[in-house]
Amino acid sequence: MWSDPDVPWSGCDAVILRSCWDYHLRLADFLAWIGWLEKAGVRLWNPPDMVRWNADKSYLRDLESRGIPIVPTLWPEERVSLLQQLRALGWDRAVIKPRVSATAHRTMLVSADDAADAQSLADELLAGPGVMVQQFMDGIRTNGEWSLIFFSAKFSHAVIKIPRAGDFRVQHDFGGSEESAEAPREIREAAARVVAALEQVPLYARVDGVESGGRFLLMELELIEPALFLGFTGDAAHRFAKSVSDHLR
Image 1 (cartoon, rainbow, N blue to C red):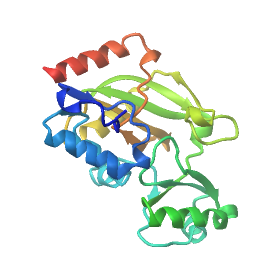
Image 2: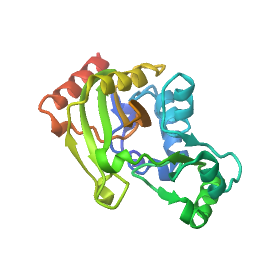
Image 3: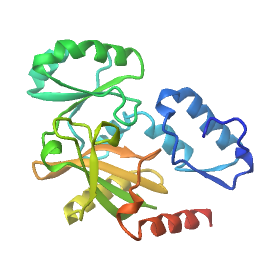
Image 4: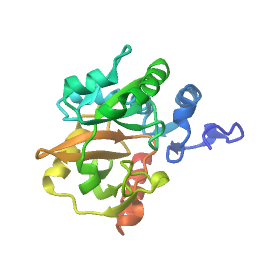
C-alpha cells in the first residue's frame, strides 16, 4: 500500500504505480508521498510530474488545447444552474464528475428533468475537488467505451467496456464488463495522437474514449492506476514486462 509507513520505499530501485486505488480520497497525502519519492531519488513510473498533472481531470483541457478532441465538457469555476446550462448547450443528458476521482466515484447522470436534484452534488463538488460536466454519449450504452492500452507510447491492445443494462457506468463496481476488441486503424491512430501529445513518454497509458460523428473523442487518459487488461491478449503481459525492463535500463 502506498501509504504504509513501514515499506522501505527509499531502498527500491523503482516504484511502479499500479494499485493506489484510494489516491483520489487522500490526494494531498498521495501527492506528498509522490514528492517524497522524488526527493529521495526513487525512480517512479509514471513520472512524478505526469502523475501530478493526471491526478486532476482538468488535464483534459490541456490536451484539448493541444488539438485532441475530447467529449464536450463544461468546467464551472463558479456556481452555475445545471438546468440552464443543459438547455443552453442543447444537451439531453450530461454526466457530473469530480475533477479528482476514480472508479466513477460520485459520478451522476443527469437530464433536464432531474437537474434540480443533481444541483446540490454539482455545488458540493465545486466547493471541494472541483466539478466537470460532460455531455453524455449515448453510444456508450449501445457500442461501449474504448480502452486502448499503450506501453512506452506503443499500442499494445484494446478492449471495449460495456455498462450493465440500464446503467451508464462501465466499471465492474457497477456491473460493467469488457471484452477484447480489434480497434480500427482510425481509433488506434487517434489514441496514439493522445499519447504523443504528452510531454514525456509514459511507461503505461490507457486512452478511454468513444466514437461520435466519425471521430474518436477522448473521455479520460489514465496514467496513474488504470486496469491494463493484461489477460485479454496473450502477449500483453510480456509487452508490459519488456517496457518495464527497458525503462530500468
